[in-house]
Picture 1 (tube, one colour):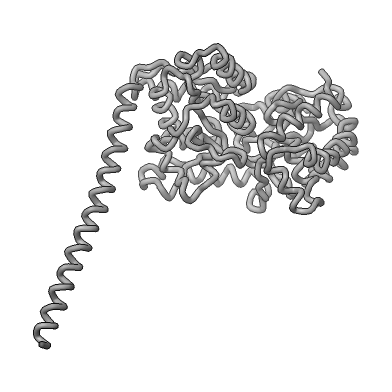
Picture 2 (tube, rainbow, N blue to C red):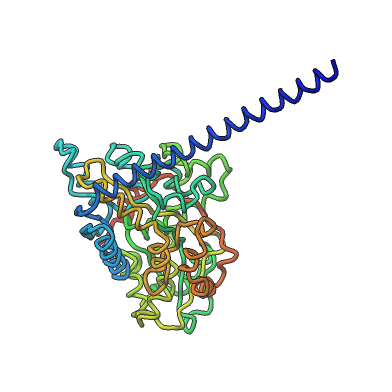
Length: 423
């Protein structure tokens, strides 16, 4: 009997090992099958997207960015024989309006926009009206290099899930700058800024909304001013705006601006249109403190002699608004496969590393370096990034502020124009 039980146990063990082995092989076969299927899908995209014309609608207000897009166009031309056309926008809403008009005209297959640089309110608007191609970002081989599973910011735009309708392209944070030879008492908080501007009237301003940079300043101010509110009310900034949340949160912003505007450049009776105009006023010494959403813009401007080499950057101690920007494909693009190839290239280590160089653009990469091979990591200049970080006085202590829900942009813009609408 003992011998029988002994052999019976051996037989059971062998059977279990066989089952585990078969299961393991089954899982491996399934994984290999999925990988092969994904590879086939992407090869089909490459086959159909090659030689297409892709119309990339993107802001054209910065020559460095324009030059970078021209470089990318040459790369996809060489790699895929794609003709990438940069359609320069003064505001992303122009592309949104175009696609919306096409949909209203039942133009569901032959739209003029193949790829659009987008985020925030414009994304929310396009998603709301079903103007974007769905579930494509996950198809991009390079999307996995952002490590989206452990980096949820890559799949959320101003807190709104992207649902595969966008691919991340870059990230940045609100950064202030000044001429260190002329300014010794830089404002380091929002309340400091009001006091400083009162002492130095005419030497600070911000772009008129709905300009992205001007709106970023207003959102930063609203976030900081709302910190005295209970958390339950603060949290409403990350939810769709309501009449109740407007009444609870916006009065503090208008009260602050009522105090700030008389101290601004031209007494707040005229506002510039964008960040480039701000930088020109800094170069002309009309302004003494200004801000940007790209920290690398400052050393780049210094290298071009657009700003003095005594210019220094810093981030406010009470917080720095931060976000990720994306590219998206309209639902009626006639060149969806070509647009996917371009979006995938823009996420490549080669393209991301070049974009991050301060002399090229200085836009921070969205790739997770831990996902890269040693050869790919070597493309990123660690010394340059250390130099950039060193240029920002308090970068190590930066408190990053999350973007508001996109619905706040329209409300703030409309009320700002009603209150302060000027030339």
